[in-house]
Amino acid sequence: MDYKLNNGGCCMNKKGCNRNSTQKLSTFDWMCDLPETQNETDFVEVQFKNTRKGYYLNSTKIPLEKGDVIAVESSPGHDIGEVTLVGRLVLLQMKKYNVHPEKVDVRRVYRKAKETDLEKFQEAKAKEHETMIKARQIAENLQLNMKIGDVEFQGDGNKAIFYYIADERVDFRQLIKVFAETFRIRIEMKQIGARQEAGRIGGIGPCGRELCCSGWMTNFNSVSTSAARIQDISLNPQKLAGQCGKLKCCMNFELDSYQDAIKDFPSKEIQLETVDNIYYHFKTDVFKGLLAYSTSQNFAANLITISAKRAKEIIAMNRKGSKPEFLDDHSEEISKPIVVDYENGVGEGSLTRFDSNKKLSNNTKNRRPDNRQQQSRPDQNDNKGGAPRFQKPIKKTDIGNENNENNEK
Image (cartoon, rainbow, N blue to C red; front, side):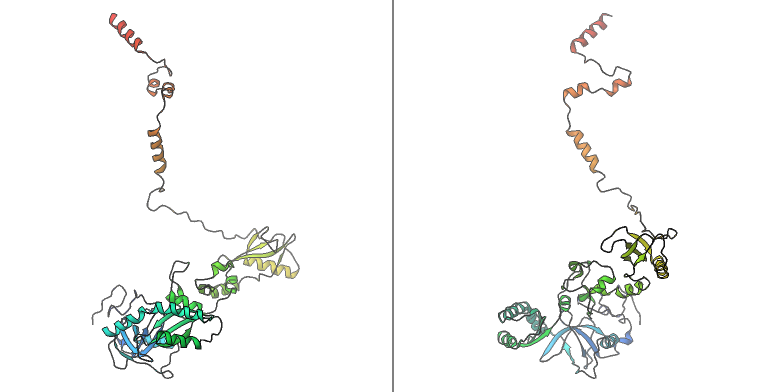
């Protein structure tokens, strides 16, 4: 078999890798160019609206590829979804999410979606926004402390999942009755958190990239303010909170690295004593391995920056009862920030390099000196010939007299 590499690195088909997929939480199939892995299992991963996924058994051996729209078993009726993974990688994903086929009733794949299935699917999706608005009005009329974040209709339109957010336990028995009478469908209520809601809605974060919760994150671990303190991040609620209103998940990404690096630093509670003063910890620079100490415990005063090694030496001296004369050791060289002088690779100057010339040219054109200035301004050509710098203006009568004298001569 001849293999040809394309843009995605896969060689079997264009749907294998699907790097440019618009689906949220899409998984890159790095085994798509291995033909022996495609038929290893009959399970396929199917993704529905936003981030909801499921694993279904292809018992009828339908040839499926990544990106196919299929009809799968649901209760009741059937649902419409898109195939996002096939082959060995499906088994790894099932193991990751603790999906055991032996313990759970496995649902089957019915068929590839037909035109009639897609028409019903589009009709059901068109009702979602209107249904969500009515559901919010009904919940508000019943005075329930909850927020309905999203509504997802099943592919055949016989069932709808209402995703809601609530801080407390909500008794929505009356709510379900009103929903069933109003919408004439089967109702399923599913509670989600603020992070899951942000993942379903999506958006752009302050970093300029897609939200991690809607791009690749599946497990939402709790984030505490201690993560900000360990990383010396400003405790500003507006900067620490994400679009969901909770603390940003990215604060946990580098937390373990910071905790490992801080182990080499002395405790912040330890005071450093010298002959003249007592110094309190003010700031830690983990990247450079430096500590800043202040003579005041409440604000920055007489800041002195030393290395972690020097701080440990002073702590050891204080425990022995001795005090150094100076806090910083003048023999040690503290690394200074590197200032990079960037060069202009294009070879051009500033964008405003022509502005001054334009202004001067316009001023010289518009400026018209009066006769007094012209008479008092010396002529440059007169100086070259050795003539006096200032001359009396010549009258027409003088010119005529000079001509007459010349004629007489």
